[in-house]
Length: 507
Image (cartoon, rainbow, N blue to C red; front, side, top):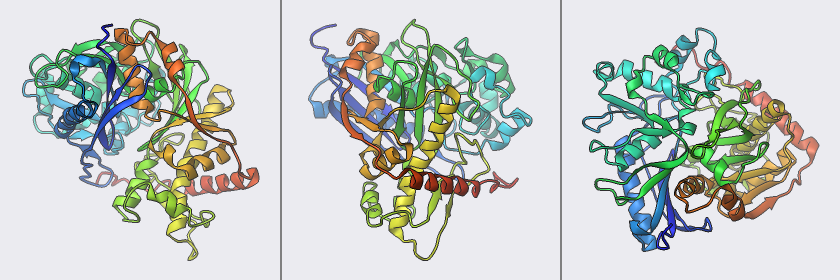
């Protein structure tokens, strides 16, 4: 590696914003660029993004990060990409234009499709793909686009359309788009489509046929760390190797140095996602978790994970800010929650996209229960924060049941870990220490490490372990009986969200 190659750039294309973060060899942040994109809600339960806006924002934040650092592409060893995983784009490979907006992972419009595919058995493909049939995943979203966008099915059958998760869209554009862009994804993102066999790490043609998705649309599946191509066209990354791709939660697991079986992390972002490394073993879940690929470095064996996916945590805070105008900025929720001693008996179950792990109830919708005239804005703010911790405990319970391993501490990352009230309540509720690393942006960091390892900037996983450092630890301080009582009330509140959606779910 040349001495002038001093940095690795991570592109973190998330649910609410795109970021470019520059890291040095010690894994420290040098500079960041960030830009939010529009959240499009055409109907209840539908969530979309504009892929063209995302592409433009990615290019802009790359320029911002490089400009703030005062460097150029010649000082970059590699670029890594991490992304909101199940969000799906279908585009015309001749024009480079999407045929429809990206359908976001939170979107629930495909409920009838998944019911029809399952024929009453939501686990129809689970032994192959590790996932239940649910609106969360990519394959049914592609089917919806092909079935509902004029001309899309015909173009797909003619081999003129490509599909991918956001990593594929970003990679294709940065490597030239219609002028020779590469159409790849990595194993972690492919494992979120419902179309990849976990054992073979290849597309399952039978499932693709069931969903009416031509094989010609699918990207080639690669490892998480290899050179996929180099920047081309009008990219600021011309000739820079793009060498790492990981879905956002797998990237955070990698950035948290969870390399040994039994190690787990929890990311607090738009939703919450806990992953438990299960090594080279594919562990099926009996308790509502997902079996997924954790990472694959070059030609090494794939590493697998159990995952607990929670749809709405940080986005609930955003909803209070944007829809109810309860405060002007997300961090203000902590100050509001601190005005009261407890939740006043109020529990907020944010089933805005149904309930993910461990329930997988698409018929659920959000509920605020336990209200009396005593409850005020502070109690609601506290109930919102506590909802994140309660949902996490449900996932921990499921993970312990599946793995037989009892949690001894929880590594955490993501934007919500800045909230001291939430982190302390989480430690109290789980009755284990909660630990935040110095670099809390572990999603971007994981993608950077994968890319850097692929080109020799870092020698391997040991460099990641050596660079990891603890920033803060929250020890349990709560009364266990009180925590258990609140958890029981939470579980009762969850049942009030069931069976809300009738047959007119998409009407």
